[in-house]
Image (cartoon, rainbow, N blue to C red; front, side):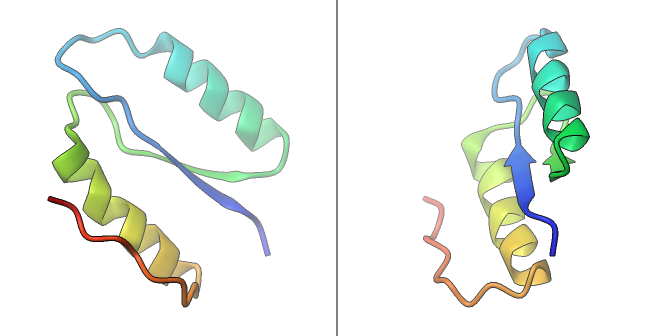
Length: 66
């Protein structure tokens, strides 16, 4: 099974080149990368992490977002 990594770009600016470079490197290394896109907040990224873990079949508890 491929390891999944969730990457989020938190903030209101459009500077996402570094995130995209890291995502590409991880994909090339064999990881499945889930990129949440620009202009995210911790509140919007948090639930996505739980969704990704459940989709992967993880039984680990997902901490709640505040």
